[in-house]
Image 1 (cartoon, rainbow, N blue to C red):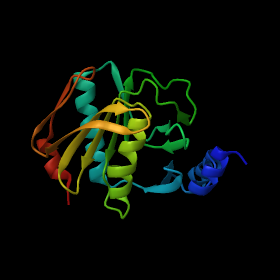
Image 2 (image 1 turned 90 degrees about the horizontal axis):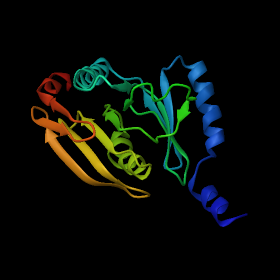
Image 3 (image 1 turned 120 degrees about the horizontal axis):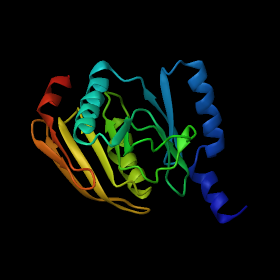
Length: 200
């Protein structure tokens, strides 16, 4: 057994190929009641979003389309992340140049993705998944920006300056109600006041 194969067997629950078969089966059998991800060598389930969660994603989509009609905001798009562990994630939204994923399969390469977005859910593994594992995985994959809309502490966090293999070097945090600038090449201003309406 090679050193890499041995390390994989010690740290990963399964191979990425096994995960993809399980995820495809779950998608057929559950009518999208659950969406599976494979991050940090572990399989995880994202439960179906509530109405406020989906409303926040639509709030962001409207602002992005108004400011930058040349960009697309995909929802639930599968991405291949984490070079070493070959992870798979389904961000709540993925901002890309127009028609970027045309012709892609279920799990697309993150190259060319401008920003990924997660909106926290009220479940037990939100802290580990959205605040720890995903910033590390998205940054290590070279995605320029990660926007976390955190309903638990009523804040938006913009992670930037990805460091290959590490995560993000810079984080800007603003409370709901503040202005958040998504810098170049995005050039989008977000007034987050409306987000106060969508928290429990």
